Amino acid sequence: MQTFRIIRDADINSSEAAPKEFLERKAARAVLFDKDGKVALFHSTKNHYHKLPGGGVEDGEDLETALRRELLEETGCSAGNIRELGIIEEYRNGLALHQLSYCFIADVVGEKGSPQLTEDEVAEGFVVEWLDINTAIQTLEGEGGVEDYEGKFIQMRDLTFLKEARNIF
Image (tube, rainbow, N blue to C red; front, side):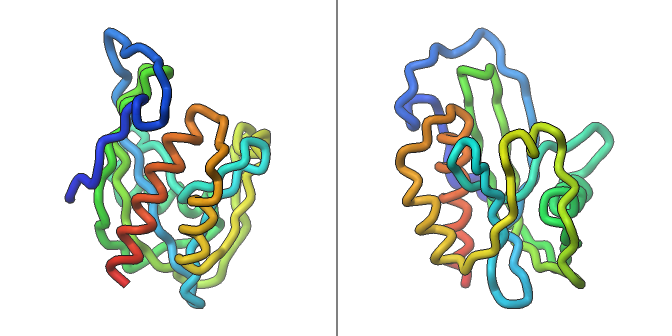
């Protein structure tokens, strides 16, 4: 898979000092299309940003297994026609985290179900929104005032993924 970019604290205008060591994390996420050609965005109503559905790869999981699990949990949808999009590497100094986000393009299979959110996701006010890809990109571009440290990384990462996906279509 192609690496699209590396995001560091300086890219989000943060001056957090680099830690001595980073926790390594792999994540799988997707630009998930429904039958109407709309993509799923996970909206943090508390922290005022949107993100692509997906999350961490758990021990014993491969990327596709983690992706399918995360999409089902966060959107209530099963995914098929999964194809590689690319990778973004993040060095989040403030969390001592080095994350590799593997992004895919996928299609909803069957009917949309109900998300099964974690307590943290409920506390952040996450809701799923379905938007055409141009509106999804405009939505993330319009969130210039994201204050949340993680949200700034997420916004830059997922905006890149959405634009790359749009280039394919």
